[in-house]
Each structure stands twice: as C-alpha cells, then as structure tokens.
Length: 109
Ligand code: AMP
Ligand code: ZN
Image (tube, rainbow, N blue to C red; front, side, top):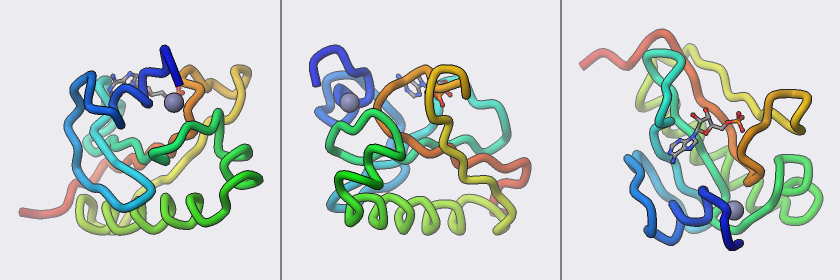
C-alpha cells in the first residue's frame, strides 16, 4: 500500500534491522525500543490491524505468531510480551498489522 511505512520495509525501500523472516511475515527491531528487546513482527501483505488479518487471512496470522514465537525464544530468556495495539484509542500509530515482542531480558550470549 502506498505511503505505508511497513509496506516500504517489506519492499526494502526503507531500511530496517531485520531479525527474522518467513514466507508470509518479517520481523525487525523497533526504531524506538521501549525495552531491552523490542521487535516488531508483521505480515508481508498489508492488513490494517491484527483483527483484519485474523478475519481475512488466518494462515498469515498463524505464520506471524509462529515467527514471533521463534524469534522471542531466540532473543529472550523465554519471558516476553507479544502485544497488538489495535485502533488509535489503543495506541496504534502504524496501520499495518504488527505485534510487539518486548522483554527486559535479552537472551544470554
Ligand atoms: P504502534 O504504536 O503499536 O502502532 O507501534 C508502531 C511502532 O512502530 C512504534 O513502536 C514505533 O517506534 C515503530 N516504528 C515506526 N516506524 C518504524 C520504522 N521505520 N522502523 C522500525 N520501527 C518503526
Ligand atoms: Zn502496509
């Protein structure tokens, strides 16, 4: 979708620090991390929020959850939040579905 910042990350026209990919989803570091680990997981196709993704493409939703879970287990000690702000009044600011993986505990090196 034109003018969607996350579609531009999928297309590679704006940079992001990609930490994982699957056929249907990609994961990259949040540009303004609020915790020691802060990663966003998005579907490659544009859906405006997680409810729309769930309704319109449940297989892509499962793919996103699986990629996010895999990355969370790689990048944290297994203690993390996986959250989806949905709607402006809930704090959503980018209207391309995305989950936030956040944790105070990065994986031990
Ligand atoms: P939300 O408020 O749930 O819509 O989350 C949007 C998130 O996207 C925020 O945490 C932003 O810091 C993050 N963000 C915005 N632009 C970029 C970008 N170009 N690369 C990485 N993260 C971004
Ligand atoms: Zn988009």
